[in-house]
Image (cartoon, rainbow, N blue to C red; front, side, top):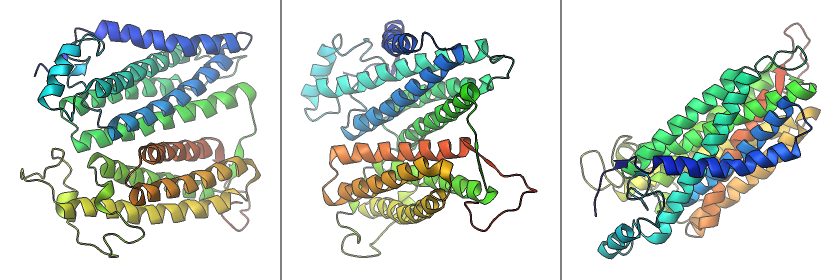
Length: 382
């Protein structure tokens, strides 16, 4: 049964669900930090929101990988209802018409839980934005961090909501789904910066002073990671993971037949090329193999960066985390190919990319370049 793509009749009830979900973390932060300063409570809430946003990214990957993105084909509710319970008749009719999906009761619940979690995170980010403006004068005469960080995060989460709506109403359009995933990583980055700045503001920890070349290397690694994450999102949203089922070669060749022109047509429906024909297997191969080649470059640069970070005492923790995450990404990326795209590995691969973003942004936000007049010893890690 087809209905309107947008039906805002359940929006008030869904917003209430988001508020109720946000009350749990808000109460927990208050009870655990009731003797803390307002700045300390804001810092704690920022870290909790960062954790829950990371969970939301993981659940978004789970939603996509279980083909649940169209479990409710309208937005923001499910067939005009606030939950699949009220839409059971519509869901059953859609399932009878197409038993394999995309609409089933299980997929509808997965999709709606994802929307509920997104609204809960949106409420928490709204609270952070309000708290940032109320506490903008800082504490004990010291200037606080700019409230525009929290405001930018609030604006971005609204943009994410719009991409989430378009993901459904444009029927998993690959470019939109890719931007939606990258937007989740951007939220992680924004919240990480705020967490670091708030920690420094309340405790005044010594900021790490490193060479300008090391910070440039971290920035370049983050830029390359963004490109690699975009490539990975393009693989996932086009379902191109299984275009190569062997490793390290692909289809028994080091350079299989590939169609880059059609594979990287950006504005086209899922499964089709811009001219309306079905996307070819060679196009999917080009998408997959490009991601694999970029992975080699990204892994090499990040591994080299780890070596230099280990030489800086204040960055040992980041170096250890990067080492573990690189190993995780290699293992999960490889298992996606040779083990026929297992769900757990695929979700962890998406989460690992998000965690890499957090660690690299944390590294940048917690360091500053040494003064230009200082003598720079040899090596990036001076």
